[in-house]
Length: 478
Image (cartoon, rainbow, N blue to C red; front, side, top):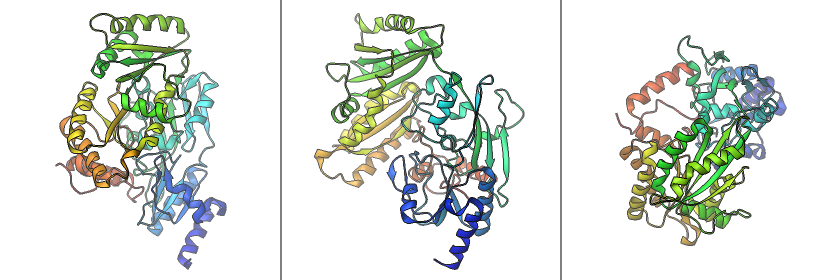
């Protein structure tokens, strides 16, 4: 270890305490993984501040020493934005100890929380007041990371994403002073100028460090009903969605689609999972209804049965079978799909979004293209078709031997070219931007937009921070 490195570690220790400066290889290994597993480089050190003042001091130190900071929250992200780079030296700032405050205001229906608070901890505290932050995920992220990636989840249809629920943030700017600034207020109406807090949403830790936030909460539903609907024809799903929206309005809180291959992967590979049908349908939709105390499950079930009846009988019937549950048991199938895919083989995972009316057309178009250009890769798609979000995943079966990496890359490129070029969709629906998809950002985001984004980023964070350069040059449409 050089004298310069020793001096740097000493200065870090002065800020956060020696026990919160991690440099051993075994300690750093934990911080080289995220929601997709291993994939990050080794930082010079991991530092774990406990408050905004310490974060500010770390920013000042890094600016003076010309060392990049990368911020990590719950390490559940999927774009790689919270991981250290392989080649550029950096200090990784973990906000896991920035978790002392959960302040619930039940009348204002808000929560003010430190950035390191986990979603589960927030919801446990909110539940004591009959409230929740209902962004439903398979992971348990930190609130700061949810802001950085603008998390959506399965119930976006009813509750919106993080952006729609964020009222205010406290931020440490990445400048020479480590300036601290509050943006927004715990108000639902606050039209007093530019909504600058939104520049942190989806910034992936590269426009500043969120240390605290105030978010809107929602009443916990008193009645909840789920239904798993087996469809003969996937193209009937949009018509069913519109009918349920018309009949139930905001009581429709989720409408999730699952392909036959995705369902079969979960059923075949996830122990203990039981399907409510005798056979795997060509497509299935998971519907969730939820409401307040003025409604009960009996009423919801009666109204749902009436709404579904035209789709189950007559010449226009498209639902071959239905299972209804007053608990969350039917969600087990939807949540088991990622595990089933991983057990099935090598997965090419794509997080895309389209106009709602294009989802089924895209699936059909993509199946034809893959059969022609990437045979052997099997589509296993599922996702939030009520908001146009689709986890369009491909699986190279284990029985097929070792896949050709070039073929996997070709297939991913084909998917992105089709969703963006032909359908005007998005190559990143809810995972954000990071090292894993920055090449697609350069390729598909117009140059003029990237230049503007880079100018804004330079104002927000004049000292470079994080893993994403939103103004990056490279291949892209002008």
